[in-house]
Length: 199
Image 1 (cartoon, one colour):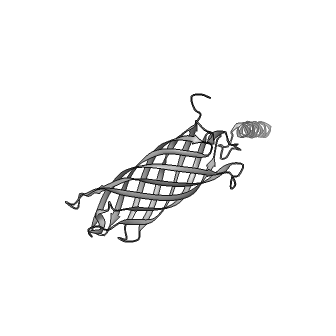
Image 2: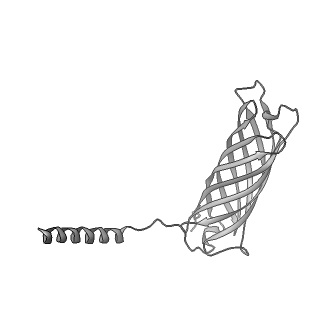
Image 3: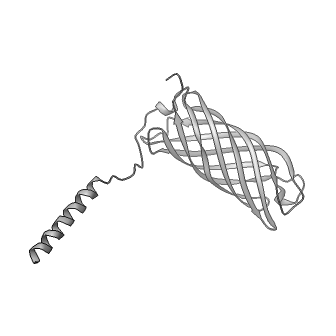
């Protein structure tokens, strides 16, 4: 009986060991060259978690920013993004929206084998509305600059972290006519690098 128990335990241990060796860990990084950043490629993705704090009105915001871009030359992307977000302030909440063309440049000098640093600028329009207020700000100018790092988890997919500064006058939460919504924001997201149709 003891031999049967020992034999069964040994077989179970062997099966578990073999199965454990066949389970692969998820890929967390990939060595990339400049191929994803070449002229003619497409950039599709989104900032899926951008938080910020408004200096002038002491509000907190959370945004989602889908985007599409095209590499007009190596390391340079021109595109447009949509911004949808919620702002929380003393007295209520507001819904923000906007559209902004952007230009992004990837730095060769600061590249690593699995990632690239980049800088980005955007200029567009933005607005906001709230259930708690009858006031609705008309669309106004929205400007932004940011810097970040794209870490490639495959040769065509990268996770990003960004730090930026945004200015817009479309902010109903302040209650002050003509006031702006200026502040730092930290975000993370993902981008997919698609080859051009001629490749």
